Length: 81
Image 1 (cartoon, rainbow, N blue to C red):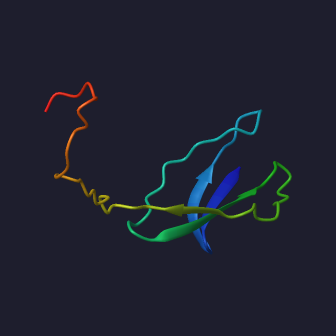
Image 2: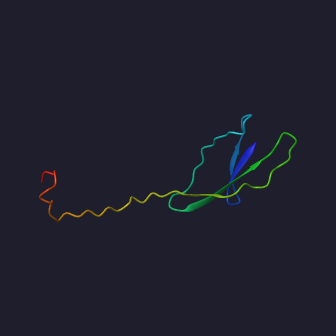
Image 3: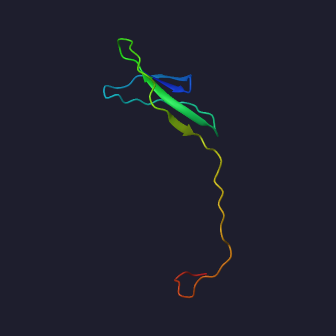
């Protein structure tokens, strides 16, 4: 069993397959950084230390784009104005 954490808050558990692979959908609040770790527990009840932190930022702010709307096309270019 693998338990995922955001800081000290449990995000839930999931069962890993025989190769150790797992997936879990979690809800993370927007526009903040989340520090995700995992702990594994074997069938005997032994729990691992927490994994290294995976920092995830849910960014919902659209990027700004600045365009240059003035200028000249060089006479030797193949662009059509």
